Length: 395
Image 1 (cartoon, helix red, strand yellow):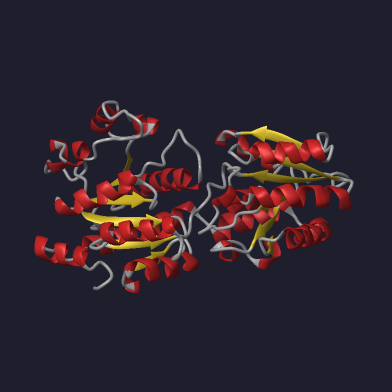
Image 2: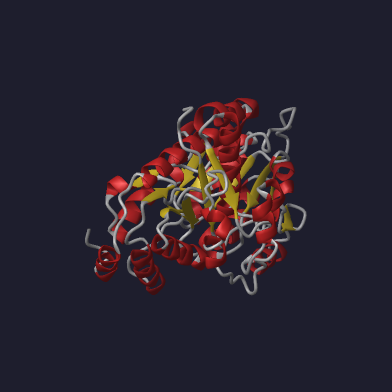
């Protein structure tokens, strides 16, 4: 380890703090753990976040650069960073060695990977989402990704389901795609000191209230559960276009005293909302991983979730109850969760997530291995790169 090369990774995505979400949290936690590895072990990684107000914790040159890169309608000029003279200094501490892009929906990520490869940088891409093969949006995105990732050095997916989806859609060699799950900072998500009383059972939903997150399912599930269990109360945190439907459902069924609408919940408040609840409900129609489930489990909550995408890979069977994305089956799963709730020990669940299942430091070390492999990939000339982009599905 003492002779291992230190890296400087440029993290690139449109999804950064101060916005909150699974991708934003993953980038922040991963970068922090890479920094800790760098300081604690001789030969870790030195990671930097771009377009983030957390810049004061990074190098001074980056801080001054970030303040000049304010977004105008979320559009920035990537080449300002890649062409910055300080990145070509001989000092290994200040030279960018690798570009790591996140999320297929990020136009900034696509631009970064293409320009970085042209400039000779090795690039790594992490796919955080699942896509189909038949609808217009998926066909368009798949073509864009095929072009962008034609000569990517290495790729990372957050679940085995996501890897299979990515390899099939983009024609990437399976040996270039690694599965590294998201991780949760368990120090931020601790259960309540004392186990909650179960005289009243609280089911919490924290999600963007959009179609993809299954908000329409909640409209049908919540009234039915409230009818079956008079001692059940719901807390709904999040905002989005489907919030109106939930509020209409609450008014129509006279559930104002049993369904609490919190609106958008700052990430700093998520833990306090979770520890006031017993069951976490996830109704997503598609998920590559779902880090919200991890945060809930770390707080000691039993999870009820739709069985979609990579969700079955996230938690063991005794920590989650799965259901088909159908209202009646979700009601069945919630009924089962309520029946096994007395057996759940929040402190034990927290320890399992922290010690045995997901660790930020373990994810950082595994990602570091991918970085090393990426740097070992041979350089390609322009003709080879253009030929791959001409027929992106052929290797």
